[in-house]
Length: 187
Ligand SMILES: [Mg+2]
Image (cartoon, rainbow, N blue to C red; front, side, top):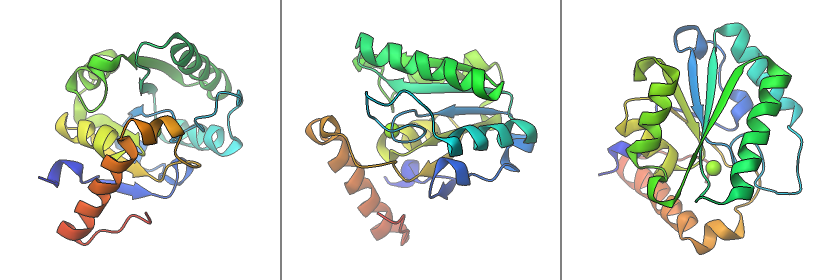
């Protein structure tokens, strides 16, 4: 039962993903909140590390990035995701799109991942899926045959993530991987 939660790679943060990965895999689907940016509505700028790492990935072969984010149909969250997609495109020269998922479509459901795959127009094997949530990003990525990379979440969990039960589900998933496979992801 825990097999779909197993990432293909694990790094402490987004900037530590080795750029060689993008020599063969030219596409990235990434979570946004707590993976690339802090979930903080007062922050409107990108970290230098995130921008620099994306530039390095582009030099290595990354062509197109799609953010896949649960926005639950909230306009503010959608506008924020679109704002960051444009900002990253402007600062890195990468082609960047974002797919905002409503509550019914939320990760790990297949619909968003399938939409990302058809937008990128490549085979799933060429896509690196990056995220901080085992139960949403990694599980969904694995089920759709993407190469999954887990990173530690940036900052602390947002209060909404606690209330929705997402934090608890994720912590249980980490516990499951530790008990079943002996893996410990610094959690
Ligand atoms: Mg996240």
